Image (cartoon, rainbow, N blue to C red; front, side, top):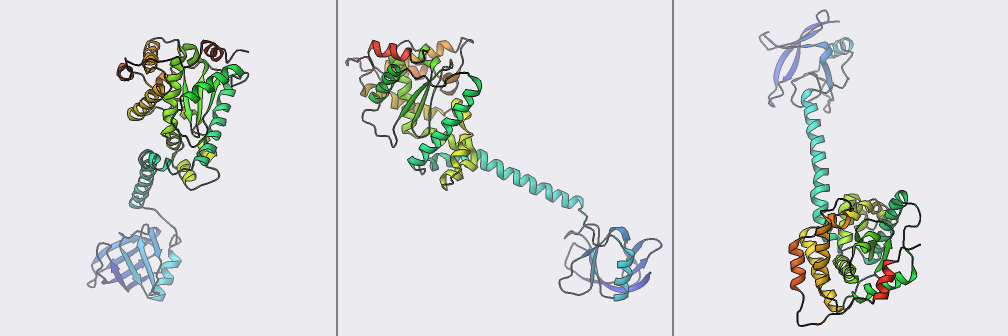
Length: 371
């Protein structure tokens, strides 16, 4: 079925202007031709490219050539005979086709979505982590810390055979006595829990909720109990400033942040995935400086010379040149001569300092992992 010179309305897709035109259908050549009022050809469309647009006004059949796109030219037919002929001759009339222009828009949308996700992960979440960390109740932070601790336990249990914690009673009691002395004048919203892990890594780190983990390798490297006390005082500084929960939020990303702030019961599970990251997480210089200052103040409060922190930094600087050592605490708490000098400046030459613990207690800590 074909027709010729049927009235229609034509829109060029570039403006809202409407033109009265004449259209003709040639089934043999598979073309729909558009003419102006004088009969001159304006355009011709292959039948296989014709697509029907929805006509909300009920004013007839709206056609375009190619995909349904706001920028495409279109015609409006109201002649029922012509409409029937076109529907019979054009099997693809209702088929959806995506033009290169539309694909371009899709890729723009995809790119914008990916950029938004990247903005959330790398900019918004880090920016909000510090501000929202203070909004998390201590009891929820304690639950998060327990979840992260369990994740770290699983991590090390897969790598090491035997017990994870060192459980020598005398050594644990001496360690807790040292930590208790370093808390003088401070109030924490949760009890400080310290434990030693039977691992050669030279490392110590604080977790959300007041957990402090010390690796056997760090105790073995310390040349005096005051060196260990300096490290513990530094980690207590991170706890006091709630650095661990902020690090956990950064590591867990947007999902962990929102779940914790909104009180989602699965928030602890989400943050447990951040356990491995927290072991080696690097703090900013400002965060490390605040923890150093806290440590220097608490060492002095406990009667221990701040020189201990300077000496420990110098020990670490020596170990940085030895490839045989695992760089755990060194990599996450990079020492420097400047930090050692700052610690040494806190020493009061006119003041007499004391040992952090007795020789017997230090020996007990050194043997805390003995079987």
